[in-house]
Amino acid sequence: MPMLDAFIPENALDPAAEGVLMQELTDLLMRNEGVDPSNERARAVSLVFLHRPTVFVAGIPASSPRYRFIPSVMEGLYDDTRRSRIVREITEAVARAEGTSFEDVAPRVWVFPTEIADGRWGGRGVIRRLPEFLAYVLGEEAGQEGARSLADRRRRDALAILENAREVAAFSES
Image (cartoon, rainbow, N blue to C red; front, side, top):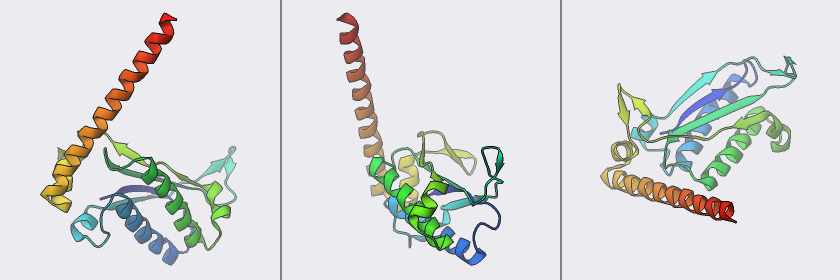
């Protein structure tokens, strides 16, 4: 179910290594969304958009490839643990594709895991919401769990906002 914008400069990787990387990225993103990578229905809606940028560092062409990856999912599918794991795993995958070490490639890989707010994911000409999308891909029970998870997250976020407002109000009064 991932949608990934992959920014990889032309000729940065051997074509075969780049093909393996695309498969690996798809699989690791699916796993981090809690989806079995062998789920054909989920694979059919897992897209990678490959961009071929020219990258400049300090105004001059980069001397070594720089990579940027923007995995996008519906709100409710990522948490801090998943985002951190995605950043690490994508960086490791690029190191394997280049045939170099994690330490060598890490300063040249940027990953921005992004959640699209519920009600703002459009496809097939309509807005898709997390519960209906999960129900389509994983079954009705997953759709119901998605609705509960999204409601729980929104409740936690609202309580955090209220608590911060109380703290600001108490600080202002002192």
